[in-house]
Length: 251
Image 1 (cartoon, rainbow, N blue to C red):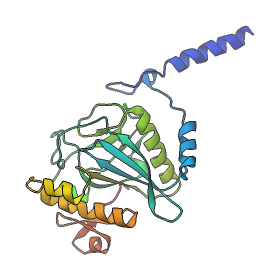
Image 2: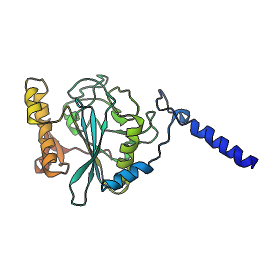
Image 3: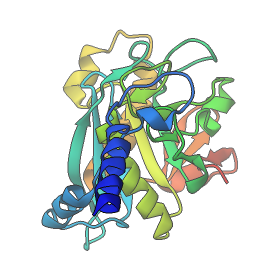
Image 4: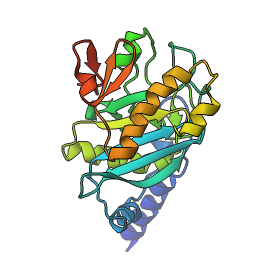
């Protein structure tokens, strides 16, 4: 009886060590929180999805939203949930160079090697910046992530609770055989009206290029194949020309 009580008290102490969500510097188990995913899995099931379904992510800066899409039985992707982006850094527009504290925009792919289960922000995955398009334009930067917490130096911070769900879906999809998860990052929802309002912006031509990929997903319900062709994104068969480099995840 005494031993049982002692074990219970020890368990209570250990659970108590996992209650803080914010940390700085290096990862510290004493400030890590454990999330029970039972309810999340039930919510996936209720929506007609399951861990392991192919996934797709869209990010919208202005709206501070991250959308999590999952592939349905008909092959098209359906929106499961959107999450608030607690913090990103910089303004609307792409990342140009290391140290500009700008969060990237564009088309990225995430493979297993880009997942970080030991992030100091609970969990994270690397967007893969710079991709082939960024490199063609001489853009530089590193460690641009989607992670937990609510601080950012070029990353997208979506809180620990939210990244726990998103990471679980991405990890399960990759483990089930999806070669890479497409992550499309936009300055805002790419409607014709929104783009027209920004017609005089320096980045309007770049955003019109992004809108082409946005529109293809909206129409087909599946992420298009994306290539970088002489400093321009191209899609589908147009992304396969000899002057094009495929947008790829890390090998």
